[in-house]
Structures are given as structure tokens and as C-alpha cells.
Length: 167
Image 1: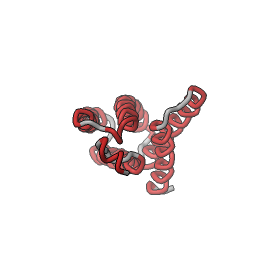
Image 2: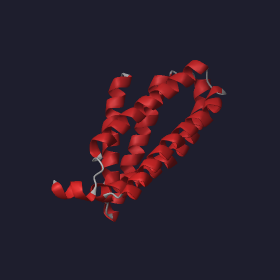
Image 3: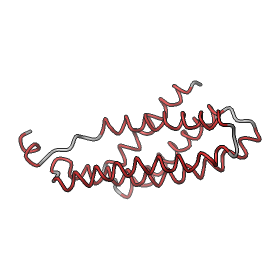
Image 4: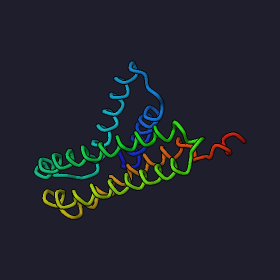
């Protein structure tokens, strides 16, 4: 299976997560949401594994670092989902203060992602070659780009109270 095919499947899974994350979920839907998130994370790991070409020795050292990396990135994604939910609740009635808060949080989340990526470079380099670290970050960035594309399609543009009333 090619990276393109795997990433297409991951995109579909991420769309489900984003949709569930942006909607108000009832408690009965919570367990399904958790299953969907777990499935998407498993697919992400499978995509990485299918494209890293790790030896057995490399895999034994790589996966614990990957799991620690993903745990930190998951916390950032939780923060991102929270930001999206807050925005979705009032996107068509934003004050300048709300808009500033949103933009500041989006920039902080982007910086947090970069900080985690930068933090883990030496850890990945300790267990695999520079080429494989570069390959991992390419895969990770492609997955993240697909997820961001899905989110961009779901999230409406910010509006002032006057703009929302005129539509």
C-alpha cells in the first residue's frame, strides 16, 4: 500500500474526528468518539510504520520515542480541539477581543507543535539515522497537512455580529 493510499484513509479518519470534535457530543457518543480517536491514532502509527522501513533493532528503539512524541502531540491536539469548539460556539458573533484571543491561541498551538518537533529531533536521532528522522518528519508533516486541510474545510470564517445578521 502506498503512502498516498494510507494517507487518504487517514484523512477520512481525521475528518470523523474533526466532525465529532466540533459538534456537541452527548455522553452516549463519547465512547464512540474515543474509539474513533483510537482508530485514527492506530492508523497514523500504521502509516508511519509502513513508510519508515525500520529494521527490527531500529523499531525496538524507535517506537518508544514515537509514542512519547505522539503523547505530547496529542495534548496539543486536545488544546486545538478545545480552541475549535470555542470558536465554533461564537464564530458568527466575534468581538475584536474574541478574534485576538483566537488568533493568539492558533499561533501558540502552531508554535507548540514546532517546539515538540524540535524537542524530539535529538531523541529520534539517537535511535535511527538522519535520513530516517527526516523521513519521519516528512510523513508526520504530510499527515498533519491532511488533517489541517480537513479542519479548514469544516471551520467557517470569522464574522462580526453585523456580518452574521446581514446573511
